[in-house]
Length: 199
Image (cartoon, rainbow, N blue to C red; front, side, top):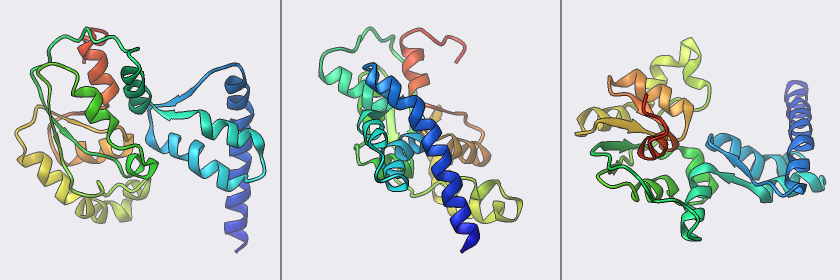
């Protein structure tokens, strides 16, 4: 119980430091945009639980958006440039658990559906098995890969050029299980805009 209490206090300390910086930005009119779903989930859902009586936490939570969701909403308002170069690629898309937990649908699929020539195959194969840092621990590695095997087999058997996911931990797991590279949807979008030729 002492360890759990210490962990909660440590998490609250981190949350307070982050919120102190971010709340000031929100008061200046900024939206918080996170490319990592876990970060968006922490700011929007977990921090309010950790610090329920902190008004700044609520301010930050209301102003936090996952990056693909933010850009999709920009498109819906007519504020997104659509001068994409065609990308004749087949993409195997893994929807991370934390995107699902955010309850925002699948904005990356909607967003990249705007890119001419890009074919997206969403692979509904469950968790990648990495489960945060679980799969990074040596004793868990094999079990982690076993848990992610349906996804890894789905990627191996799909006729794709590249894997795609918003989660950096899922990306690591996907690349452990196949030779095809995996990238973030925002990077593919940047490539379609001609902003990341090195990709």
